[in-house]
Image (cartoon, rainbow, N blue to C red; front, side):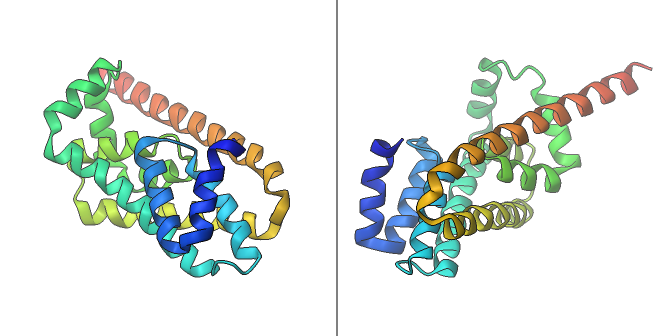
Length: 197
């Protein structure tokens, strides 16, 4: 993990907020490293006074939201391509998931941003479900502000002990992901039972 983070951290030390924005954006779209850990470490820089906490939060939220919007627009612009690829990845209940997104977009988008692992899938589903973009952006910003604030503040408080928290961040992300899967599954099963009767 440290070898993967080192170039990004050096880049942030040299170019500050532009590098922070770029590194978080790149980690969102090509998954080079977990952006949660990168944001946590950036919180350490805010604790030392090298970066301003609120400017860091602004640029991190902007980068995450731009990455979310990129996947959302991809699904809106090329729905047949995204639809085909998701079906190839065994998303057999894709139509039900689209309907679920239409009925409960807000909580789903916000919770997905707190977990991290589902962000790309939820952004794609939001685009496929044709959630209006202002609504999507609003919910994505709320979710990003919540999670990014927690991560930056944790890094700020923990300082050089951030590595101890990185494991906790990963566990929390996994728990939220499992909860999301359970909620999606439960809602889909409940809807199937309701339609069957």
